Image (cartoon, rainbow, N blue to C red):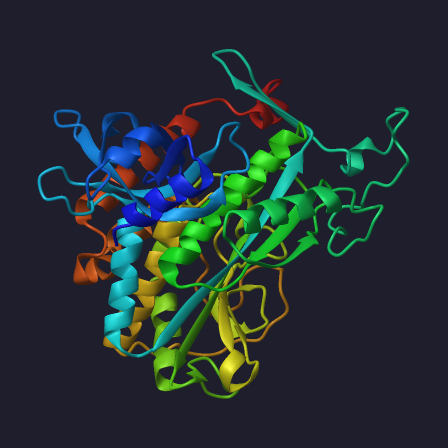
Length: 464
C-alpha cells in the first residue's frame, strides 16, 4: 500500500516539519530515522530511505549492510512527544535489489503470517487483542563491571518503602501481590495511566480498559482493542512508545521486563485470539470445540516450545514463567485456567475466544503473533487434536502426566530450532532469520549471562 499521497496531504494540512519513520529489528527494538518534510514532499511515488542495517539486529551482512526503509503505515495525528510538528510512520525494511520486504523484517514476517492464516480458509475473521502489563518506577540503576554487579529499582508504591521516614510517606503502599483493582489513593498512578491511555489513543490505538495490576510496586495493565494480526502488533509497539514517553514526561521510567522484582507477580503480555467462521467462534462450546478450533489448539500445544521461545525471548522471562502463580506452568488448555498456557473463554457462539498466557511484553510482537498464527495453521493442516481439556486451579507446579513449558531461554531456543519447520509454511519465517535471531540470543544473552558471577552466588558461596 502506497501511503505517500496520504502522507503528503497530512504534511500540507498540518504544516508538518519532519517525518519520523520507526521500524522494528528482530529483537523487538523500535528504532527510528527522521526526514525533512520538505524532502518528503519532493519524493516521487515512493519514499525509500537508505540505512546501514549492520548497526541493528536485523541480520544484514556487514559486507552489504545497506538496506532501504519504506514507510508503510501512518500514525494518527501529529506525534505528541516531538517538539516540532512531526508525523510518525511505521516502516518496513526493503531489499534494495528487488524492492520487496526483507526476509528479516519482523513486520514483513507478520504480514506473511497474516496472509497464510487468511489463505488457510478455516476462519473468515481472525483478530488479536493484546493486554500489556508493565511497571513504572521512580528510579532505576544498574551496572555490570569486572568486579561488581548491582541493580536497584524503586517505586513510591513499593511495599518496601513503608518504613522509610519521609515527609510524603503516608503508608499507602500495597501488600505483596494485592494490587489488582486497588482504588485511589492506593492506586497512586491512576492519573498517569489515564494519561498514557489518552496518548495511546491520540496516536491511533483504541484501548478497551486499564487497571492496577497485582504487584505492589506500580504495576499496570492496559488492554488494546482486538485487531488483525499486523495491526495488533503495530498497536503494541505504538502503545509501548506512548507509555515510555508519558512516563519519561513525569520523571519516571516504564519497564516491560517480565520479572524486575522478586516476590511479586511479574508482567505478562496476554494474547487473546478471536477466530470466527460464518459468524461462529471456533472456540465456542464447553464440552467440545469445533473441529477447526480443536486443531488450532492442537497446533498451539504441538508447537508450544517454539511459541514460548518467541513470546518469552529473554533470560528474565523465565523468572516469571513457571514460578508466578498467575503464569502458566504447563502445556495445557482449559477454561479460565491460569495454570495453562491456553485459557478458553466460552462466551457464547460469537464471543468465545482463547487466551495465550505465556508471553511477556519484552517480546517482539510481530514474531510472537506470527508464530501463534502459523502454529494454528499447521494444526489445521495436519489435523492435530488438542487432546484432554484440563480445568485445574492455577499455581502449584506441574500437573501429573502433562508436559511442562520450557524453564529457560536455552531450553526454549532448543525447542524452536528442533521445531522450526512449521514457521516456514508459505515461506513466512526464513531459516536465516530464525538462525540469526537464535545466534544473537545464545551468544549475546545466554552465554554472556552464564559467564558472569551473580550477586546471589556471593550470598551462597563467598565464605564456603
